[in-house]
Length: 247
Image 1 (tube, rainbow, N blue to C red):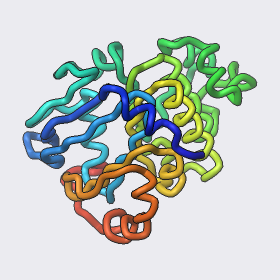
Image 2: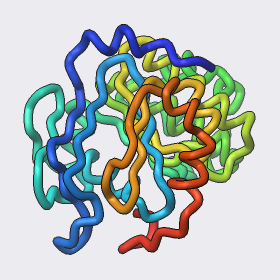
Image 3: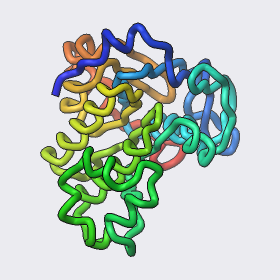
C-alpha cells in the first residue's frame, strides 16, 4: 500500500476543515486550537498517544460532541449540525466498536445502509458468501469489513475512521486500509485514527500528530515516515492521562 492521492488532492478544496477548534466534555477543552484539513482524494492520518485527543476530535467532527470554540467546516461551510444530519449530508463515521445489527443478517445490515447491497459487496467481495449469516456470528474482522463497506457504499464526501482495526490481526488491518486507500483514490476524503501506524503511514498522504490536544507535528506521510522512530518514541508511547477514557 502506497499513498497516491497527495498531488491530486493538493489541487482540490478541503472537504473538511477545522479552524481553531476547541472540543471536549462538559465545557472542558481536551482539544485546543486545532487547525486541520482533509481534501478529496487523500487519506489524512491523525496520530497521538492515548488521551491526546484523537477520539474527541473525531466525535466532534462527526457531530457527536458540541464545539467549545472555533469552527468545523464541511465542504467550505461552517456546520453545527448534529451527527444524524452530517451523516445524511456528507460524513460517514466508523468507530472502533463493531457497528452492526447483530441479530440481522449481513445482507439486511447492508440493506439498511444508504448505499445498498451490491455497491458494498463490490468493495468487500469477501462478504458475499456471508450474506445470510447473522452479523453477530461474524468474526471481529468480518464485522468491521461489513461496517466499513456499508459506510463507503453510502458515497459520503468524508470518511472518519476511528481505530478502524483495533484488536484485529495485521492481515485484516491491511485489507481494511487497502479498502480505505482505494476509496480515497476514487475521490473520498478520509481522516483516519489507526493503531497500526507503520501500515497506515504507507497508505496515507498527510499526517497530524497530537499531544495533549494540540498539533505538535504535521507533514506529508513521506516526511513523517522519515521521523517515525522519533514519533513513536516521543509522541505515541508516552503515558498521557486523558480527561475522559478514549479521548
